[in-house]
Length: 361
Image (cartoon, rainbow, N blue to C red):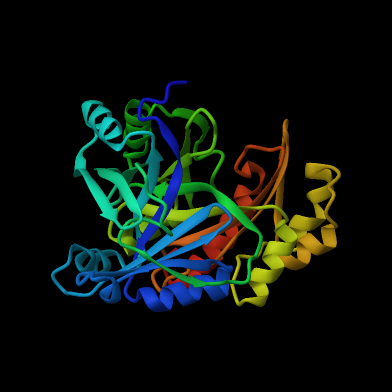
């Protein structure tokens, strides 16, 4: 496969939030991220405050507007706290931006330098689904704590074993899934890694469809979901209505030991979806032998799925905002590069119970 934008990795995910200081505390205490850098009034920035957090190779940026006329204020009013930017490191931001626009991407920011005493990076951005963007970041000689304009502000978190961002799922409106899948093929050179239709992802009441887009190295994976017609409202439609349009639904965090990570996250107060106990009664026959004790998986609520390459273990948080929008997945891969197809029915029935409690099914 080609890599027309010379994409290297997900650099960071930026959330626009109502109170970045409190959000940074939440991700430190809840997820074990460490604060690494800060930008705000003390660094000469009068419009926004930002906190950069990291764990393993996963980087979050939490940003709050300081004035009501800032575009971030309108974004938060419309969407609540949510993902604004899935920033990508590229070899050359100017070349990546020019090639993306040539291939049909809509410009969001023209290429420009960001500089401070630690050096310079080059940055540009293009639009993707909804109000989400992809920044394109390339390094010149920068040696600072995060990006130019940030000062080091280390606050250690209690590491929970998170290694990296495994994938980021986007929810789009009915009829738009193939449009955005084609966008990632045309602009980024991604390929369709896996496709799920409403026969794969459905329950008695709701259904959705999904196409997983991936770069050739499988290091950057963007599943794209859309609702499918069914008897009642799907979780995708609930998200779109609550978020005010298309956006990033969940971020999957890969870990090295899911039992360790989930145990720590639960002790930190994180809440996860649970499936019925009968799921675990059928697990040995469905997935075969596992290294992890079934009783421990059951006690934590961890799900398991197997394919030809191995198996994976995964669990999904409840929404982390007051609106039923953004949530997180914790995933450990033991050979499998799939997405847990065998867990869809049990998981979605659990989600529907939460929807029903909210009055949104």
